[in-house]
Length: 334
Image (tube, rainbow, N blue to C red; front, side, top):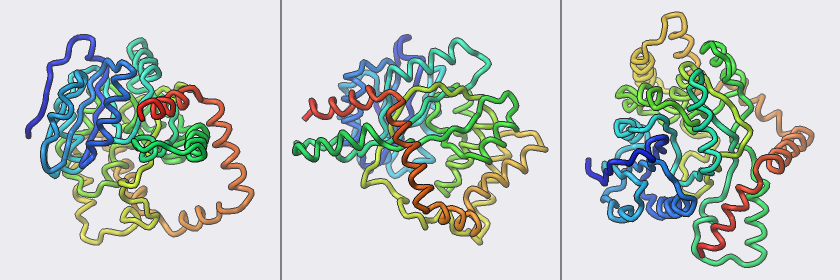
């Protein structure tokens, strides 16, 4: 492994953002410009799996720590990155996900003032990252369409209540309404525990996601604060956009199950909960035919109307100004 590693000053020790990337230089440069323009005072830790090191491109950004390991996958990258975390809190972002830093600070401030919580999160939505980062000027109609889609973008997260003191109650909440916890701002001690060596050996990327998120729910009590704290990028480089992708196909070799068992064992979970955790993770991967039918039955006009009404209400009621700041940044950077 090689890379640009800086010793961060005391003012940069509150938050580390872990960012696995591969062939993402253009996206990362745009995000670093965004962070610099918004006076980011944390550590943006890039773990780059691109064949050749791109370290020189990030030397100008004092908040960037850069680690290069050619051809490492995202799961391995997270384990590598966790070893370099020096801050009290940390989180994960993709190389096309955009944080709203003022609201990140509010979440960090809450955690520093409430030691009985391990994690905090806001709400999130989407943006078309390819259009956002494109240097080509948009026509008037295209610009209006982009602005409108950004302001009224759908909600990415869910209303899952992970505020319970008991970890088993939080797992029950996850079984009813699943949510991706990797984006939550969390105590780094928990992040390091979950992104361990056994985690890096999970060869199925979907299993790794479910394993982390359910384990996070077990170990981390999370407070939800109604602020828009990030947007997820939609971009052409994203894999697994097909609804029939590998996450719903059985692995008859048993390899996935063995890897998962080693990971669950490594977390030292109490024996009554351990088999529950193992089965919950596998059940998320192996979607049953009944649940497929249930999802397809939701394609009625009435359900779609209620769904979109909820999305529009969310968009109008959560920090629209943050989205405007983002689209104006795009406009001014062209």
